[in-house]
Image 1 (cartoon, helix red, strand yellow):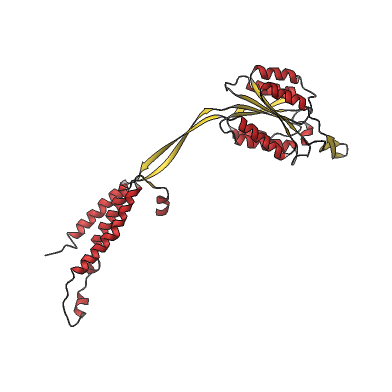
Image 2: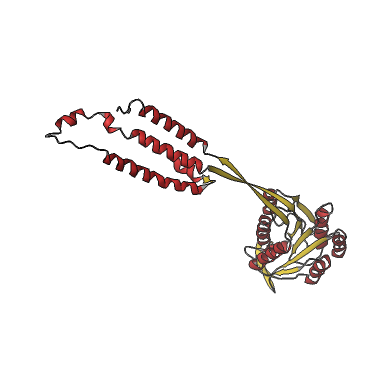
Length: 334
């Protein structure tokens, strides 16, 4: 218990703890002085002296011990023991970010581990963890688009919604234009000076009610920067396909409209990336994280609580007891 108490204690004037070096000096001086004051007398036997020894003889140094303890308490009090706790205040401007994630059937291809969709969800959750001061939302798209989670600073809820993403939630297809338009719409009323969409897809636009070029113009109108990510290995990728005999694996050609994705990114001030495996996908999100830094100032306030009062009271109590004993039970007569 005592160890736990002192583990949380710091000292305002720790150099005064050097006064503890006086204590062994005082003890040495006390006992050395006592030896010099001892009188000698020659006797034939000590039997009578043993019989006359009382409890006062055994405890005659007790007042001195109390005085030493009182001095130790005074030294502790002078060193100002205190506890410290920090209060952190965060100020600044975050970024509003929408993660637009393709959930079409081709996202179940297993050229990523375990597949493209799960890999995309994992790096999205890690990205959220690295952006504590930003509002982030999620839009999913396939043959149509849907807001999975609106802009929020509640990142626990956000990550839960990302974890719930799965194939089959929307009509199949790849509506890049609808996905981008819905993402921009989520940012349309944002007051943030920096508005970003990170659009991830593994295919070519083949559905939706909004053409990608129209969605691009909408993004430019509302000053939304778009980072685009093409997901998929080069060549063919093993993909689970539903057949009358059940789910079978087939190699399907990876077709990404890189020209479209590059155009969207370039015209909105963003950048296009190509991810061919899990590691490259993680590196892309890390690079975007570095490029879009929030302006946040963290101020730390240090608060101290003084803890020297118990030592003062203890020293006063010890000195009081020492004075009482010295002038009563251990009083010396001339």
